[in-house]
Figure 1 (tube, rainbow, N blue to C red):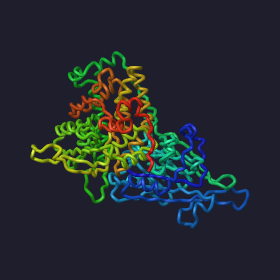
Figure 2 (tube, helix red, strand yellow):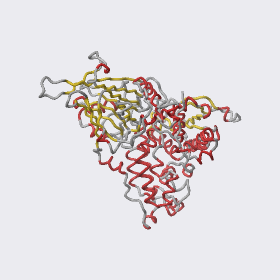
Figure 3 (cartoon, helix red, strand yellow):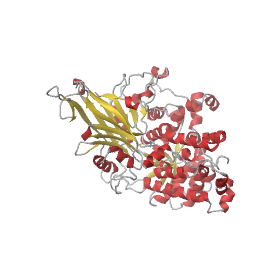
Figure 4 (cartoon, helix red, strand yellow):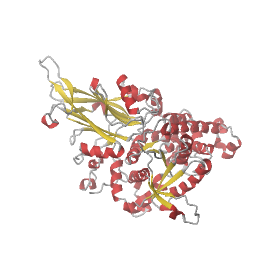
Length: 615
């Protein structure tokens, strides 16, 4: 995981071409002092291996005669000794990059600059689409590829999550954007009267969250930033006809890859079953399926298992993992003991070298009594049965919400621009789990010692964290999916799932990426692999889920079948439980902020916005 940012000053940027993509104007916000040092500080948490910066100046070249037009020259900072404030005819682009290096054999420092003057700040992974060997650093390979071909074409080829800021020297163009599902965070501040700069950053500095009276009046500084909508953008820089100012025109580019277009549109061909479909499906009952091992459903589950395993392999063992001098546990799993995390853990065992231990990170706000802690302990026993040679470490992260004042303020900044209690609860649970600072069981021969007394402190050093994001959206795992199905049957369910996938970048992934990465960890999402998404989309909806069946049976039916193929029979029967409820942070938050769960439910706490606390 890396952190990338750019601050553009002294340029008049035209946004009219983006009118259909931009959010509605917000009320004026408190003028916030977001400095380059603030941005560097918060990015360094994401990329602890190195932090670098690069500044270039744009300057009009005044023509010698009236018939000639003014042109634009680029001057690297340091070549001339003037400052931006000394002239209105100077534009400045300040690039910042921090690196959590997971690829390559030699350390790198972002932003990268090539011999042609192109500048790249990249936060992502290339799992396919661009050729590289297991010892290459994908950022270095990408920089070479961008120089040889059209930028949108190169980016549309990438398999894997990405966010990018790229200066193309030959055309005086700034390119930026993120992949079609927004699996990596990139926030934008479009120029306003209050702050005419253009900013991009992986994460919001605390300084760009308003505090005190302004927030209490509902005029929240959270709107300084917004999630950049998915896709590829460019700003072409030039000089006005008068030659008195530098201007930039923003363009949004359509995807050049037909496969990506298909995934973005998310149109399932087989939505509503016919009577004949039902007769060949497992909808007629689990017992019938068990008696017919070669049923259609079992074959489809096997197909999903194959692509999911390949997705995990790409994210854990396909490429050499850069670890510097330290040999550590390379991969951990965000682990609730539920269906998604158990499948990921079982597949990780099949992909990862047997010499490595696997950390299973579990957070609880109710000690051993939280549902996720109970299911995690049951889950590790089931994993030990199917993979007895692997050393599994259940890392028990215990938290007391009342004592997390500093942590809560930090997470408020990280989830920005999200600002509901539900986002705060989920973000806090993810941030604590990703930190991996907890307890593990000391393997003692003395079984008479109580379990809690055998625990020893442990901090996971794994830099890659597998997360089950995307499983519920694609496999009808949410309660609202069941409601839509009951109210409108298969078509309504399909439309709700489509909506979930098309807004996952805004509702989930940016927030999750920022909270995980703040610990110097990289969240990877195997269920959101391009091939996994396409495979699930090609399967008839009635084979994905059967919402006539009760919770824990018909929801995410296809994944329950995958779990059985992996030998995970107990977890295949478990109902869905969201992290904020399974960890019990929602209950503790409701008591703290509303007095009780009942009062919180009456207030619809999940959608209630919080106010940032005063310092």
